[in-house]
Image (cartoon, rainbow over all chains, first blue to last red; front, side):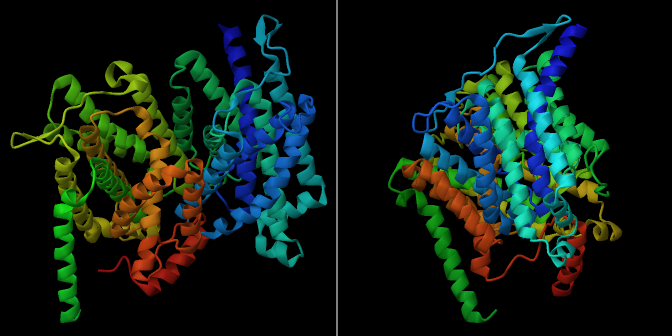
Length: 295
Length: 339
């Protein structure tokens, strides 16, 4: 029983670290631009394609190994994200209801352009790792889960170093904190936002390409992940970077536990119910700043 | 209003009424009148969403699944217990309303974007119930063979006849919504949207009114659901999922958020647009996305803003800081809490 519980939790942390990568993008974009991006799932989907097409030899018949395809996908999606920021920028200042709908509209556009380019059918991706579980002290661990956790951890640490040590990172944090003052200090705020967007898109691509072997890659795959990423960011406290990581991991664990022990049919719903219960006690998320709706 | 304008208005009203009454005789095919009927159902849904989101500022993003609660209530009562439309409709309205009030409970604690993800999640849960409780709901296959309603012994078995039922309920729904938003309840709703703290200071019980807004919007969805089930005689969970919520939200925003006439415009325009765009397949949704984007950026108040040449006087922003300055500016323009 304990073994199965530990196995389930490890599986949850594996998937959860991917949610954390998606949630990081949502949270960082929110923090720097004040934009709630409901199209982040679509950006995740585009990123998955940008990496996996190389791995599957869909570009010029070149078949590149998985790690290289992974890096190419991240870089291409980051470049894509950098320019995409310009499209999203006007939405950051509109009414919240319009912002929601506008980003959803952009998501529709991305999803359907991908359908036009690659077809709606989608494809399965062969795993680069052995699909047999490793047994450690009676606990079965899937190799992919180790890969998810390790790669996500490396990316998160790299992000943390970039944000705290580099000049760019400091400028980004400054412009997220106070746009006007940052601008008077000579920081190009819009460029900083574009870089934030690029990082968010790159992290989403990383999550998507890692997950590709365990999901069915298709242009509609973004919606569900986008929702879960947003839910994770909200769970941890929207705008809070450690919060996004905590939120993503917890959301993954809730899902795994409810799939393994409660009901696999209601997995998605139960994870959201747990989110709801936590928000009732901590309305701004676990690590979020206080923003209570007073009644 | 001058006498002349009054006459013009009356003439337009009478002509419009005649047009609506004889619409089934003008349309060329069963298909066309079916689309008209669907427009009617969408108008009801949009009116419901508008009351929660447009007037009260509460993100009810479970509209699609709540519509499903109405549809499944009617469908189950009809196929399992043989109950007629006229019994199912009020039960569907009440049940969807109650579920909606439950979905609205988190609004007491969380606001705006947090509320949006919570209601999306609760909607997913409702949809999962429709998919998984196969004994009751028929699972992914849904419910087949819902019978057509009867009126004075006449079976309403064609779209042309059904049109009059839908027309009646759309007119009733619109008039009721107008009453709601024009009254004390509506003023409280708007006060909660624009400035909850002031509303509370003025003695509005914010919590009760928020739940009421959710109840009303879900009740509209319930009515739309029962109408949909008995019109199409077939329902399945995928009709009432997240995408339908987005479709309802889109028509409400494109028509005009915070305006009942906007809901009518959006509820007519979007379903028809969808039918026309269907021919171009995937480009359909690209075009659809572009239309949304253009509306959001250039006419944030929706089409009704062009008609009335007036920008919307309400805005929901993320930060209270901006919100209060906006509210202060706004209160100079017109006093919402007044009277």
